[in-house]
Length: 152
Image (cartoon, rainbow, N blue to C red; front, side, top):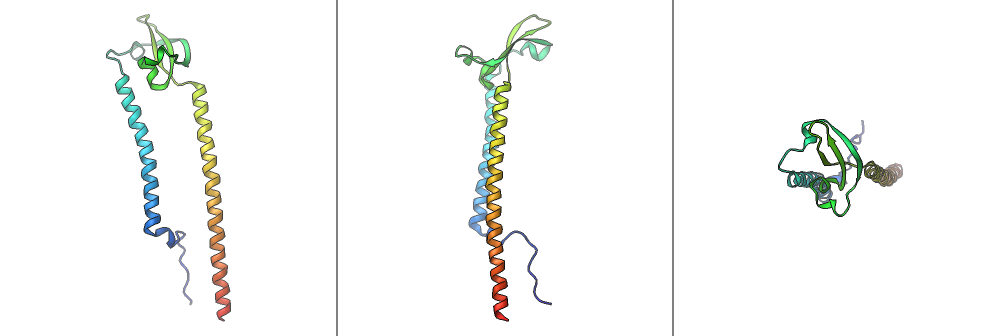
């Protein structure tokens, strides 16, 4: 029997040190982006935390004013620093009015569509890369077959 080609789908050109280094650099940057954002958000919450525990963490509350963007006066409040949105709540037992950080549905929708757009862009990019790679591999295979036929 003749020598058969490997079924391995990872081409040898992908195992070159330069390509491996680029892949490693990409994943390091992605990891830094993800973990850096997590660390920054944790840092913000620890800095913005008040000394006393808010009543809404200890008892039931009713939302008095729906979630809205912080104005310039409110922007220095601890509740506004986290998300840029705040809602006024009324704690039922103590009857205290307090402000609580919240996430706006408009902001969430914007982030969702931003994510969807990024995923669509990446899908198109990688589909083009796969098509180009497949075309390249097909060309190499047909060239190899042509050489084999010529050698007969």
